[in-house]
Length: 385
Image 1 (spheres, one colour):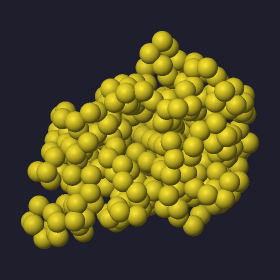
Image 2 (cartoon, rainbow, N blue to C red):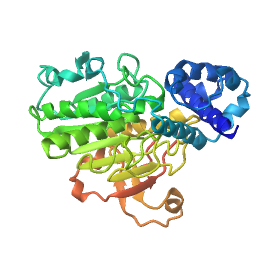
Image 3 (tube, one colour):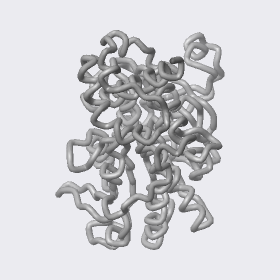
């Protein structure tokens, strides 16, 4: 009975996170029936092969709304991570699923429209007359349940921000065809997806200098970016200059495990913004320089759901890209936000976002940096950290 209860908790928490993703900011307030329906749609494929004593969907449906919604946010993430670990340990999923590269695309965003190129044929993009080899290239890797074919706030906001700075090649990796299942299931594919991207970047440096490339990944996309950086280093013998991780996904990614994600060393400079720590995003520092807006709190100012906080990382970054906003997010190297507010930290500062990579990495003070943020745009407080 004890084992059965644990499984119920894991399934309930996994369903809550999935329902929150599906329904957006209102998802945390869905009825228990809605949560069960959401779980039933995406959970059966994942759990059908895991040899655990599972309750029926009807049994889970008997849980009251407050029972399902009563878990702390950290417990939601812990339940998913435990479920993922159990699935891997029992071979209940296919953690090394070989992606069908014909279903993945680069999308070159331009003022005239978006142009798709198969990931497996990266040379078609790099040699396209729409790709300007004299410009810097920004590659954004989106995460779970985002697609360039539908409104993609992260891609749109970042494209507009970079466009405001001038001309860039702005490329989005459209991963939706392979990352459209349960969050923990989709995370298993990131190493192979990243390797495919890494091979494409190997081709890219035949056309442009490596220093003109900046790889950015949000959520699961951050781990895909890390895998791409490792693959690039393996083939070329040197690193990409910079990878930016925007709230790298938390469940199933732990340093030293087979499913490792983005980490320092994947590029010459790995900078990370943590905005939903311990829930959908990782808490531990994994980059050369890690920024913690609002400290180690799971919810960002102005947010009421975990998905809102998870998205804040790209919102903060996009704000920092806009001309004149480069120093909107000044952070202090410190042990925590409380110590910063109390004035207990030495004034070793760094700028979060776009400008962190404007100097050579050797001149950047590395470590963990904390700052306060506003609840609405402009989010940055400048020197008033």
